[in-house]
Image (cartoon, rainbow, N blue to C red):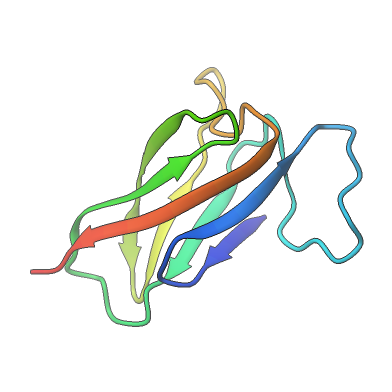
Length: 103
């Protein structure tokens, strides 16, 4: 499963485990999901960028910083695997802002 953004702040919904998302929902993520690939196409080659992250505002008002890896034109992050706490620990709307420093 991967979720794709497009070079600016993007929003996605994390659903409760037994919640049924709308029919038109794409890239569905559930509370507790692990190894979910988050990708954001930055529209330019970011291979040499440093300090890459996604700053994430979770539905409960908390913030997280997920370390991103440049890959061609995309910044990528794969969500945590147990026993670490899940990156998707609350249901609701998440907003992610990609960041990186160009040389």
